[in-house]
Image 1 (cartoon, rainbow, N blue to C red):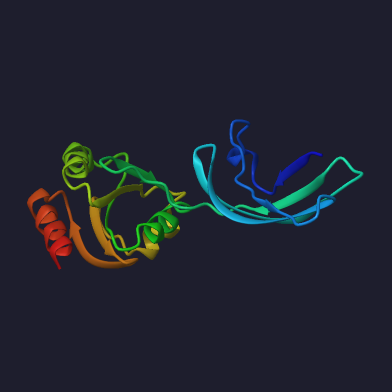
Image 2 (image 1 turned 180 degrees about the vertical axis):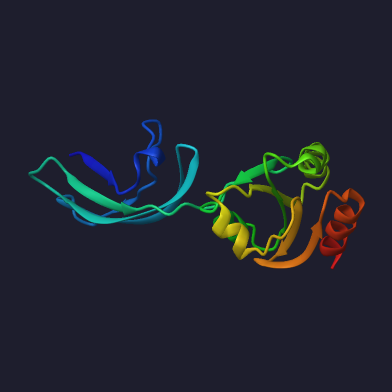
Length: 184
């Protein structure tokens, strides 16, 4: 008996190397019922696979349809690049952690100068999630939603809410703001 998994996800999320996390339960040897909701790694994305269906005798198996939701992936000790689609899932997955967002542009001189210092902060504060958002045309709706006026702007979030903001490449002000949010 074979189990075929059909993902309703864009091909960019599919990976031949990923194996879905499914469990089956049955009291009868002739059929199995499957119901599962697990967090699995699929390619470079973290996804929530929800599956349900039944397996019976006499066929080549059953097709299990899954819903795929992108969740937040960030690396402790590094700055994670986000976009309009990945920002909120990452912030929501950080739960009680402090999140610091560097809002920058490719052409901004002060943004380029403070970027290595921002990376050093990510390496120092392992209990903080460090993100960066290129405020280009594609991410303009998110930048507008977050209320950006100048670059660089650093937004500090706690439990999904902006609690502090530092505008300009003011490293000492940024460190003070991070320390204040972490301790409060």
